[in-house]
Image (tube, rainbow, N blue to C red; front, side):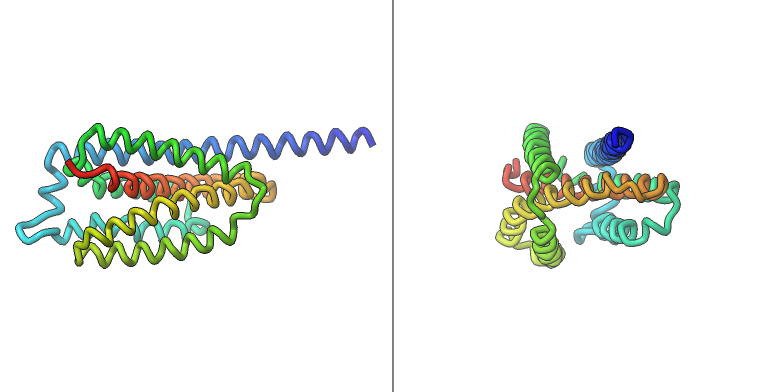
Length: 237
């Protein structure tokens, strides 16, 4: 009986170690993507490269539309096909995605002051961290809430695409307001979902590595969208 107790303790310790390693890598990939995107966004805006490439005399250039929508297609493809990809391919596409997002975010440095961007980043980090902790430690099942929030997110995305051509400030305000609730809620849901993956001992080493990248990608996307939702309330200079 005593031997069995030791086995149970060893199994629990192993699960805890797997979970710590999983989340350490998830956040490592998330912060790597944020760093790449932030540096590239700043560089592209300050050198004028973004304006030259993304705009023409009549508005957005063809390359501008590619910069705007390519990250979406890449993110969907990654999340749907990642289990059939090699770890090397996932790594390359993950880095490519962070580069594309960095270029597409260049506009914020043309519209907002550095102080507004910095303040928004820290506010976003606080809100994101709080909801991540809530999702990790809560005993409440958030699966139903996650399904509802994802439906709202799809609706917000469709409205955002339509508003690119409509240019309505009211629609933009409503989308931003909804985003505050949708992306904070999805952060909590995603953390609870990732916690379940992190403690799954049936996954192979390769499967865990792939899921670490996808977990980092999802949290990165949620952070960026929450950041943009909050930034829109800061006000333009």
